[in-house]
Image (cartoon, rainbow, N blue to C red; front, side, top):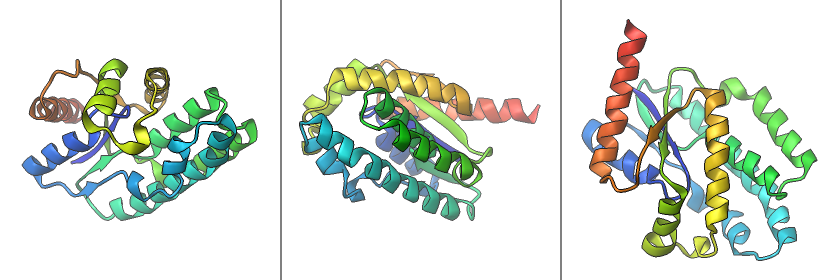
Length: 205
């Protein structure tokens, strides 16, 4: 079983992965955001010019981790992934719309992704998007987990990410799992695993 969990910031990706791992013992590939040296400065800066300065290297750093993890995942028949190349694609697309990436930077990134597509995205992984309302994500970010680098996160930014994800998901065969945000992690994990069972049953018919 190969699973990739996608979702907006604050959607509950990591906690969902951990609950599925607890039940299944799947190998976990986590999103290594804490190790990205550009991320704190990207979120901390107030000026658009400074955002522009950090945005491109921030995404290139993530892209290198996606490539490295893909090579590691090829050796395994089963795993669960907390965000991957499609997540990066969604972020870059949204940041281009916000003016945080220049056209040249965006095209450079996309050309790189398209050339390496077969080393970034495989067709044997079930990709599930946790479709949590942006308002719920915003509440979790600002009122519950309160990470220092996310203190200035805006609801508009999360709404933009949600819209971008839905556009990107349709291009890569990602399955949306509609959630209210009131479900427990156990209930979300149940829904993810039930959806995957349904998909595998359909593919075997």
